[in-house]
Each structure stands twice: as C-alpha cells, then as structure tokens.
Length: 125
Image (tube, rainbow, N blue to C red):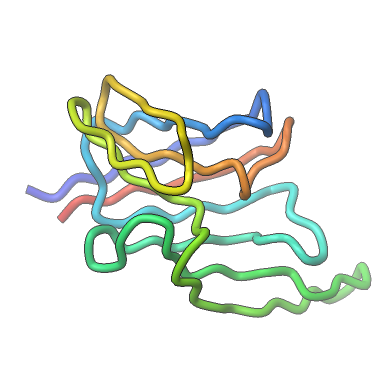
C-alpha cells in the first residue's frame, strides 16, 4: 500500500538536525526552502534506498535580480541532507546524533538555519 504525507517545519535551531516523523520510513522525500537565497538550496529530492543516505539531487539559486531567478541542478554523492530513520533502528550518516521513535526522516544541519520554513513531501511505495 502506498503512503503519502506532507507538512511544514519551522526550524527552531539551525545547529541541530531536524527529526521529522511521518508515520512510515519513506522511499522518497522532497524538501523546499522558503528562505533560500542566492547560493542556497531551494529544493532537495531524495530517492530512498535506491539512492542511499546523504545523497541527493538539489536545485540551487544561482542569481536573483528581483525579476528573474536562475537555478542550477546537481546530483551529490555525499553530504546530502536527507537521512531515513525507522522507529527502532535509525540510519544516520555524517552525524553523531541518534533518534528513536516514530518512523520518518531527518534533515541534516547543512540544509537549515534557525527560523527557516521548509515544506516537505514524503512517499512510500
């Protein structure tokens, strides 16, 4: 059975990873940042176990002159921001934090700053 969940997150501390409970371990996560500016990631796509933890496709804002916004897309093989977790055995890469509790995903510190507003979608096929 497929599952789908969406939500928003207002970051309270950009110096710690954010644990997002969705009720299942997702196969795909998409993140959007409301606060991204030039040089920052505005969108991140992560494709579960097919891709692996800390890998991602992301879109970065290259320039914004107030009337147009140019972006650049890239795949990164390490240092990605989405990490899956399950309620009993979290899978955490590039981070010393561990989490327990409801299944979901973790957003690593490198993507977020205090007061950022993020929208997310999580899918399980």
